[in-house]
Length: 389
View 1 (cartoon, helix red, strand yellow):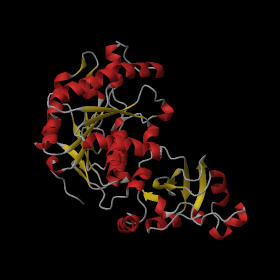
View 2: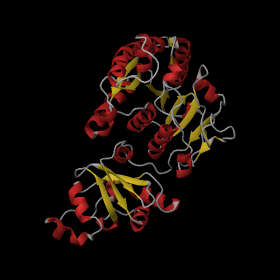
View 3: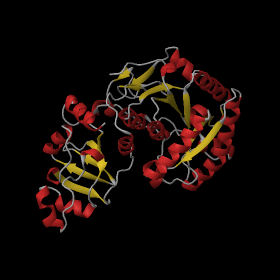
């Protein structure tokens, strides 16, 4: 496991900031907090570190400006609040960063901008150009057009996708909690704080709770999801409290936070994109023999598939689910859903007779697959990852 490093030793850092840190429900923007955060960012930039910010707060700020009532908003109200709030949020970041002679660039992303390969590459090119010229990209989901069906819905996972997209080596999630506990600390006074997480196991996932306030759409569940995306690509992650002024300085000075170790065998760029897909088009449920084979670095053959769910086309990303019901891998499927169902459980030699054309021997080839969960022993998983990294 890679050991935890001081912030100054990272090359490129993505910082995610929750709505409740930036916006007070009654008073609006927390300007003093933002100025202190930008001073922290200026300090990192002065040490030659690339900094990207994934900033929540557009809807929260917009509803404050528009004086919308408390409670859940209708979709059109959220979109209107985002339209108003995003202008104010971008202006606030630009003005605060400019005090340190830093230029801010606004990037608004939708789910499709990171799920569709061509749009993913275009977004990455724009962000990398901003970093090249020394600007700080301020990134948010485009809530003015996003709906429940085509949105991230939280900026934790968006930040993880941005981190993997740009090759960052550290992701910092700042929120209203100082790290990961064995249980939600507001519900269990005996919850244990976890300072170092070497690997995100099913036990770690089980510790996650829900969102803590009406301003937040995330929670520990989405932070663990973000950790899985980030660490798989070789990016470390820190969960820390942002309630104090200058939270980055606080981390550097030893404030409590949880550190998630990056994978020792990060996947390649294309497989990083596959692993980070938030909405697989379908699922392939496999047997124990297939789980063992995948853990040993082999492709998924039709014979190991017990059932197929979803509507997908050849080349779409699908989740591979083990007998216990947990996802163990993701990959680009070689068949449309209908044909996949017809050959599931059958030998590769039977494919031509069943479908009327030769097809591919593998349902998902190992070159188009990345392990996202536990399959086999740790040594087997590491061997598999090394075979196609």
